[in-house]
Image (cartoon, rainbow, N blue to C red; front, side, top):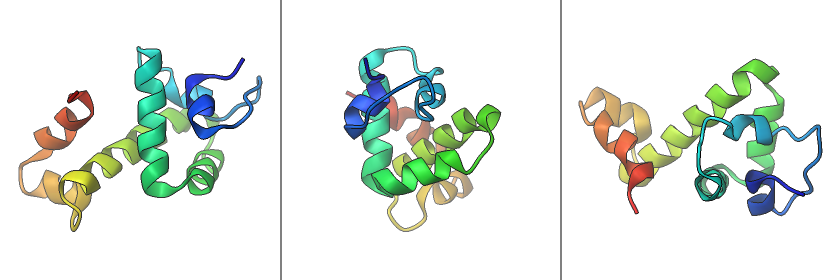
Length: 101
């Protein structure tokens, strides 16, 4: 059976899946799928998998979190992204965005 991230990406999931370990910090299964779909929408499925496979296993979760924040930042502030929100003291918008219904 596929994990929620792989299911959203329509990719077969096995013991060697690189996306599963990235999503362990997200508690709810539907949130894992939503986060994966949201990040893949911004960076593309192939690029997402390439980014994740390029870093060592212990850092993959942090990379996914970083990509999620950047995608949220680009959704809120398309020009400057997450860095623009951080510099303009509006980081809370980026942190709250994934929690909105």
